[in-house]
Amino acid sequence: MKKGLLIASLVILASLISGCGKETLTCTMNQDNSMAKMKQEIIATFNGNKAKTVEAIITMEMDKSYKNHMNDLKSSIEEEMKDYEKQYDVKTKISVDGTTLKYSMEADSDKMSKEARTLFGFDTNAKQTKDDAKKQLEEAGFTCK
Image 1 (cartoon, rainbow, N blue to C red):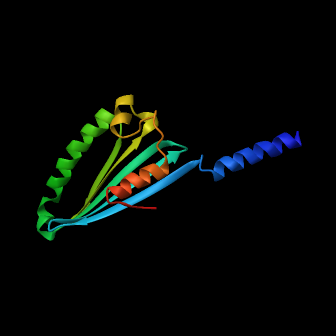
Image 2: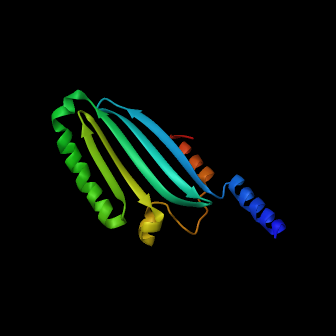
Image 3: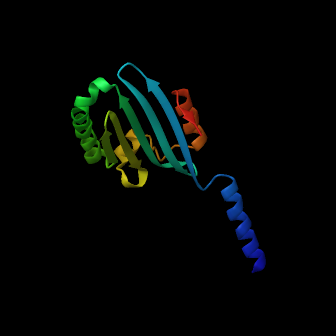
C-alpha cells in the first residue's frame, strides 16, 4: 500500500515538473503614433497542450485633442464588442478615464462553440503548447514571459 502511494506521488510530482499542469503566458506589445500610445497585453492559460483561456487587454492613451471624443470612441467599440459577446460567447469590458481607453476580451474554450473555438485559435485537435504560442506571439512583435 505504501509503495503504491509513493509511486502515485512520484507520478503526480513528475507531471507537475514536466509542465502538464496549468501554466500562464503573458505577452505585451507597445505601439506609439501621433494619435495614441497603445499597450496590448495577452494573457493565456494552458492545461498541458491545450489553451484554456485567452484574455486580450488593450490600453490606449489618446492625444489630449481627443478628450471630447472619448465617449464616442467608447460607444463605437462597445457596439462591436457586444457582437463578439453574442456571436462567440466571450466576456468584454471597456472603460474610459480622461483620455485613456481600456478594453478587454476574454475567451474560455470550455464555454465556446466549436466554430468560435476555431476562430479564436482553440483548435482542440492540435497541440497548443505554451512554447508554441510564445514563439508565434514573439514573431508578431510581442514580448513574452
